[in-house]
Length: 253
Image (cartoon, rainbow, N blue to C red):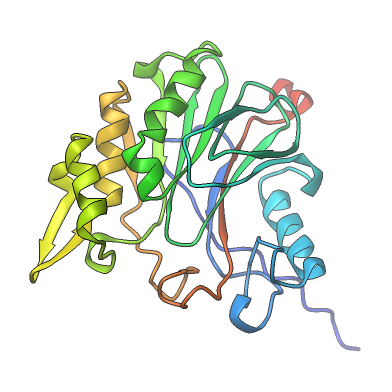
């Protein structure tokens, strides 16, 4: 008799300072194939059925269902959406105080930010590419959480994997926008070429918003374990950074 091989569990990264169910996904543990091989969570180009399996695996690993995701059509802006139920919105950050809602941010070089105030049960998730970073989307997410009862000094934040400064060359106009935004120290001169340290810039933005407990993964999305838009010339999958408040029944258990 041949025993069935169990489905592989997704390999997820977690931040030690976040108290609620959360994860930064990697490529490992999914069913997508080809350039999207692994745990691709974006169905715009990949087989939707494969992506549905991947999303269900991710949700299940955190004690949620695939129907619990609140996610975005991301536009590289600074709009923060308050999500009181699962669904899809246009914007680049989400906040909620509603149990059972799993906030999701998609990335493939941009930085995902996850935030939580454990005392009042308010969470946030943001997508920070260079435009979101220079627009201080981390600060705007903190402000939206405060409107739900959070206190900046209590908020814990995690900066997940994204493209590291060594790999992120940009033009002079982008660099100048960072300087004008007061983030010039994160413009790097590397062998006569201009690069950006987006992880450091987002940490500084969060600190400026009053957040003191910040964890930075230190992982670069160009590593083989992740999807990278730049490394793969635009044909690649997406990771998701997710965070959710447990369902009400679980929280009372």
